Image (cartoon, rainbow, N blue to C red; front, side, top):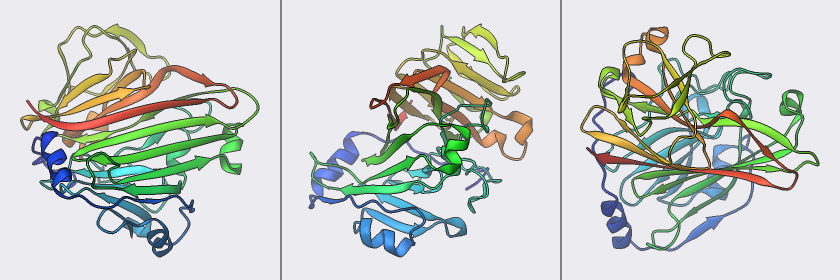
Amino acid sequence: MLCSAPTMRAARAARPAAAARAAPGRRAVFAVRASAGAGVADLQKKFGIKGNVEFVEGKAGTPTVVLKHSCGASAQVYLHGACVTSWKQASGDEVLYVRPDAVFDKSKPISGGVPHCFPQFGPGAMQQHGFARNLDWEVASTSADLQPDEKDPEVELVLTENDYTLKMWPHKFKAVYTVTLHGEQLRTDFRVINTGDAPFSFTSALHTYFEVLHVDKAKVTGLKGLTYLDKSKDPKNPATGKESRDAVTFGSGLVDSVYLDAPAHVELDVGTGAAVAIDASGWKDVVVWNPHLTMKECYESFVCVENALAGGPVTVQPGDSWRATTNFQVVDL
């Protein structure tokens, strides 16, 4: 529920694994590419997997894929922006947050969940946060298997250059984004492949919104001692500082900080006795954001902890690729 207190409960990794072992099934893999412009019925026919992967009409009729794990966890991904808008534990408790001002008619990016920032994080030469969150992604494949040593429910989405992107960023590329439910854990895998004949550079992020009991109770651990860029006063000319706190807190004002060379593991205490553990590879930085009174209707209900390449760009040579992964899990405190 938007702008409401969560009832998120802690999840144990052993429980979903046991559930998967208790319900063996056959493997199903579908790898025919289909445009997001295809009808939901066509997508379901080509890529749907009964009980695990379902294509439905989301809000405003926008094509959406729902992943369902045998343990009861679920995730929802809009093809517009390849945006994960829901990740629920087996209990039914929502972990992510979608803002009340979010629109789903493709007139603008979806505000909430896990939006993409690519090939630019924040302000710069092109539009804010680039173009990946503004476009429909294609479905490349889906898979599901309830055998313990095989794949969990998964969807792979692809974005390539077009006239719209080339006007802003004159490069040929292939972005591949895979979303997987591993029990109650949410996993993402983001790859960028240079399909052109010249090197290109980019910045990027997963702009993840998490629901919290109250912004005053939320805190992020794992960032102490890091150098950070404070963008709260001037995003284009951030001040530099060094984090001295054991936990980054919110509620006293706008928070917009880029923590450079962040560790692979950080945790967000959501204020309910549980935390979201975030484990990443490939993403060099962590961005912590809360808009405070600039979004006074809902800022108390969420914070963003973003895996990012925000401190500086990465360069990919022709024929090469860059890859980053994340694993999100709810844990007891």
